[in-house]
Image (cartoon, rainbow, N blue to C red; front, side, top):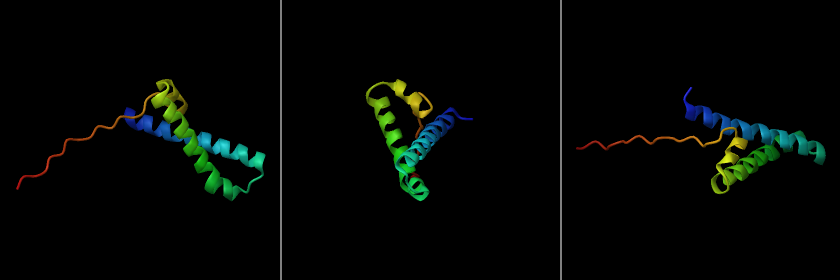
Length: 86
């Protein structure tokens, strides 16, 4: 498996799992309906978790990347494409 693919999958899966766990925990603490958790709270928790640790990784220390599942963001190479000459 390509290392960038592995890193991108981890950095998507870890915030998703954490966001879901936070949303479920908040649901029990706030007595919310399951549809509210699934539709609003889970994506919001994922977004906030990823945003906080991605910001910390970029501006505080690269070590915060581990909280996203992998210490470094994936690097995607852009292919050099040339336009056809006519």
